[in-house]
Amino acid sequence: MTALITGASKGIGKEFVIEFAKNKIDVIMVARSQKLLHEHAQFVEKKYKTKVHVISLDLSVQNAAEEVYQAVNKKGLVVNYLVNNAGFGDYGEFANSDLKKQSDMINLNILTLTKLTHLFVQDMKKHKQGKILNLASIAAFQPGPMMSVYFAAKHFVLGFSEAIHEELKPYNIQVTALCPGPTESEFGQVAEFQMLKNPKPNRFPTAKDVAQFGFKKMMKGEAVAIHGFVNTMLSTLVRLIPRSIVRKIVRYRIK
View 1 (tube, rainbow, N blue to C red):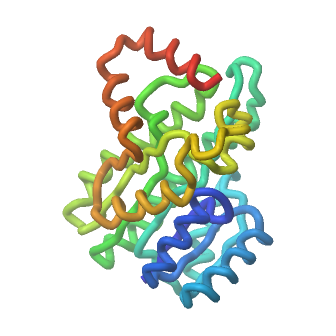
View 2 (tube, rainbow, N blue to C red):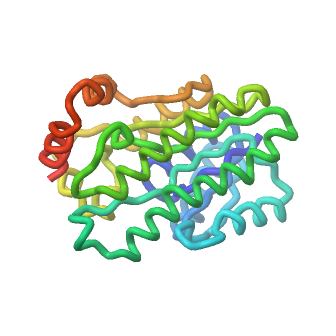
């Protein structure tokens, strides 16, 4: 059995590698940093005695998904578990943002995720089994002033995942949308997200916490997995509050 994990060199993706390896499932790690990938691959192989393959690639560029799929086929591997974890955010007013960065975010968080799912689900259908986890967020349940494109992308990931969860049931393929809240990882530094730049110790869950939770929910085949009691309550509450108020609350919270 083999799992393909994107964004596997850091944060939640890196911890997902360990979760699969602990359960004696071989791993294909995909990310940009070849050095970090190989370092983590060597550590995991030595500690957990599982096979780890490395694909170094920038998934935000056009046709990256096709390159990953071709690389996997060249290795003669079959992907039983697909974890679309790679993604990044950006903080600031949309009108003043770097359009290239916003475009790259859409390519990575939406387009590459969609393409990888489409490519690998064909093989899963042939084998009549498979599991897919797409990393959404509690951002998926609300608009996100100051992080507009990121929140909108997570709306897509959640809606897309729930829809194909139903479509793929007859083929014994399960799809899970993992929705964590703010997490202690490199995400805050990349996004320049003030809340996560210098978090207080133990204020937010760790990447390990989220990966362990996500792995369990993926294995159970749950459609939507919201990490944490507070996040679960908030995701329900925002559906009951007028949207005009929700927008103001979110803008205040992510300063």
